[in-house]
Image (cartoon, rainbow, N blue to C red; front, side, top):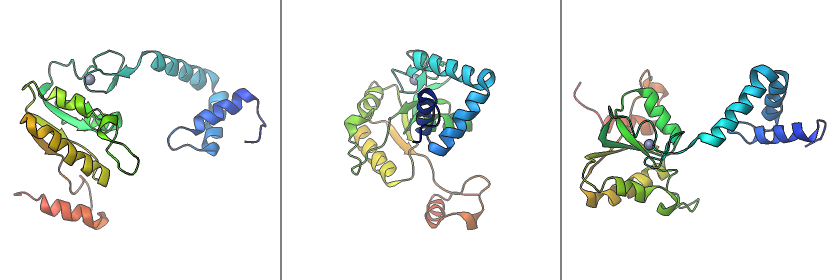
Amino acid sequence: MASTAGPEIERLIALLSKLPGMGPRSGRRAALALLKKRDQLLTPLAEAMAEAAARVRPCRVCGSLDTAETCAICTDGARDGSLICVVEEVGALWAMERGGAWRGRYHVLGGLLSALDGVGPDALRVNELVGRTSDGAVREVVLALPATVDGQTTAHYLADRLAPTGVQVTSLARGVPVGGELDWLDDGTIAQALRARRPA
Ligand SMILES: [Zn+2]
């Protein structure tokens, strides 16, 4: 990287460039925006990041992120503790919460099984999930995993691991998205939606 700015600014650019969806070009733009808006952006962002780094940690039960040792969802008495929704990462949990339809709890796996990337069950929070379902208090585990090869491999593995516990294991339905036009859908989605059809 051409060192036209001082080392502090170059470091800022280099770090910003590593964020998802960013590269050196957008890293430079973001750094400039921050430096130009010191009071509105740079200082509050630095404070928010320092606070997050100091206080946010994984929930010891579900693996979500919160400032408490056990997260707000796991301690929410209004939620149904007999239902656990398994997600790949915290981002998927946030998406489920935005949907507003899930009133159970969660389990964040921390990734997916992947032969290609050498990710085995021990790298994921699988044993923790089996442990949570072993005391008889959980009646259903909903697998909300991606409709990808790794997602489905992981779902099959989890169903096998959970079978001895006797808990019901289900998966999210796949099909036509809300507001979706049929001629925009890929063939696989249409085929899945047709298989999952139900009485109108
Ligand atoms: Zn939790």
